Length: 193
Image 1 (cartoon, rainbow, N blue to C red):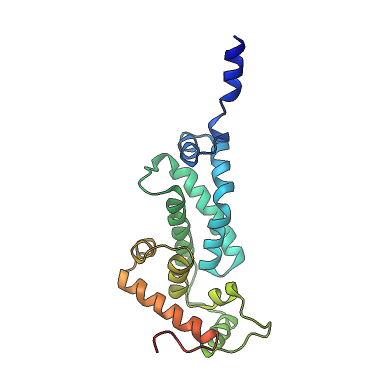
Image 2: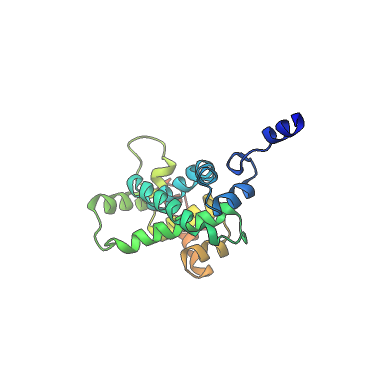
């Protein structure tokens, strides 16, 4: 019985296991502690993805929250054909795109128009060296989404085009546009010209 007590102490609940697959399995069976561990492990990346795609901190917070709520609800149907992080990023992208669809995109603030005009013209930042996050946020939406997914998060054009629901060629063209505008922001000659 002494050995049985020692053995039982060594067995940890699934929520305390370090193996991500075990956490996903436990969470998909309703283990809230396992899901909390997954949340803590992935919230930073998901929030960063949402922030870079939206360019708006408050909207990114909302999208991050929606992503994890949607993930909790859909987790029992997660088949494991992709990594959990990839699946979660897909949900995050869908939340961002869904938010864009739900709000009236035809209303544009004058500040965003001026920011974009300055970015395209390569106007220097008053703050000095260009801030990466601000530069990404200044890009037009399609170019920003592709740059974030392909350029920053390392997804292939095929994966990014699937996330965004656009053709692979459109994805490549948007990345080229983002690079061109990025170079213009920094006052450099665009690549390939």
